[in-house]
Picture 1 (tube, rainbow, N blue to C red):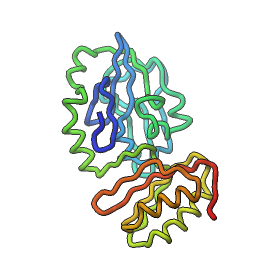
Picture 2: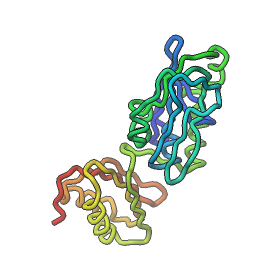
Picture 3: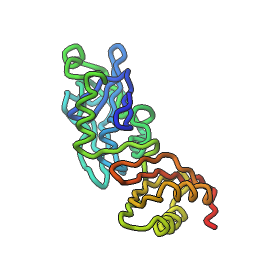
Picture 4: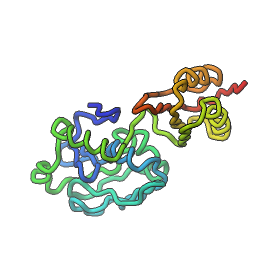
Length: 225
């Protein structure tokens, strides 16, 4: 299901207070964080996870996440023994932003009390309205690619924004993603022209409340002339 551009797979169970999800399979479960947490926290820069074999009770921490906006625990939505943690999350924390339901899973648990604790989790259809309200409350935004960089230019002509965007894209690694915010009414036309001229990828865009949001990915090719 997609709610306000944020994705929530139908086959998962959700714990809304902790912004976590659970995928059950017999006597084990995979646990991760939702796209809501990703959108609220921003780009995640550090992750520490508990050791394999550790026993966690529901609500206990599976580890700690850090971003420029957030530093806090990952509360476990269920109880169990940690069978495996995701090394990729530790070495590349942004995978939690880029692929929260796939490569960015957090831990695999041997469940202990799942029959009782399952009642505290919700399927996406029951959780839909609460998630919609939470996204609105935190003004959280999800895009087709999660940004590494932000360029917020309000009250600035689009031509000036594009000069700054040129400078930024030249300085960042190939594959990095930029979120541009502009209130210039010509922004969409100018951004399409910019993408054609520069050879970069315009991945996503929308207009909300008079503000344009653009998601640009550096492809490696570059022609600023």
